[in-house]
Image 1 (cartoon, one colour):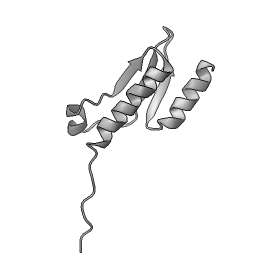
Image 2 (cartoon, rainbow, N blue to C red):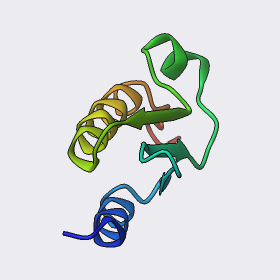
Image 3 (spheres, rainbow, N blue to C red):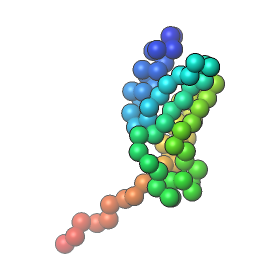
Image 4 (tube, rainbow, N blue to C red):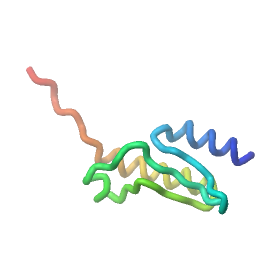
Length: 79
């Protein structure tokens, strides 16, 4: 699969991230929105990198899992 196809597939799967490949051949992702303090404490990163597309996907899944566990949740609706 071409690297353009990998980029497009990963970008579709992780819409809250900007995905790119550097001139040096590394794969990168940066979040579109800032992290909360709780997400930073949970090990979330604003930008991650990997050697190949599948490694980047694995890291993105891990990051989304960490962030999701610490997203603010809406409380019950007022009466």
